[in-house]
Image 1 (cartoon, rainbow over the protein chains, first blue to last red):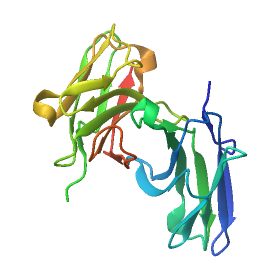
Image 2 (image 1 turned 30 degrees about the vertical axis):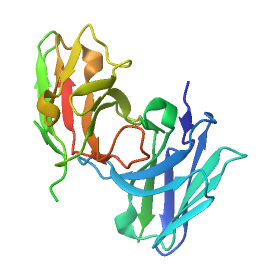
Image 3 (image 1 turned 90 degrees about the vertical axis):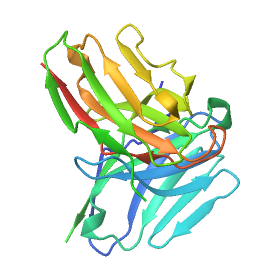
Length: 113
Length: 116
């Protein structure tokens, strides 16, 4: 039972354009969501997070949107840069599970120069 | 601030052999996690420590996997005996506060295990 789903295994975007990565979840108890970026042979690196009391959080070129009614969140990268090419993981947690992270399967983003 | 350290980075063993991984979390971080990441999947939690106590090990295959966090700092994860399906990247992560806080987890580079 996948509680966090990233249905697009890969995404290609032209440099300078917007990248939109999507994530769906099924557990209504999740109240904190995170995006991690992973380069080959490295561990995941925290990118941005959002609490369920918000519907948007922005940090520079990165914005995360949360739609609780649809149990959907998305990560927008504007403008996309070649260095953004990596695997992006969506993760979620809830207080009842001691803040353990449940990860999606990841989306490979390729930004083409 | 130094990040999460893990060693070794790579390990190749034959099935039925034993292997151990080491993790040194970020200084002062109370909570430590071990994850297993199989190729093409997201990380899956194996065990969570708070200080030197186990918070959750419900997804740890205890017939072959064991983990400890002595003195609430470093941690080791052991597999004995290894199976082919244990081939994966083993990630260690730490977070600063107690388990109930909505903390960010910081990951180490991982150990890539190949079981032949």
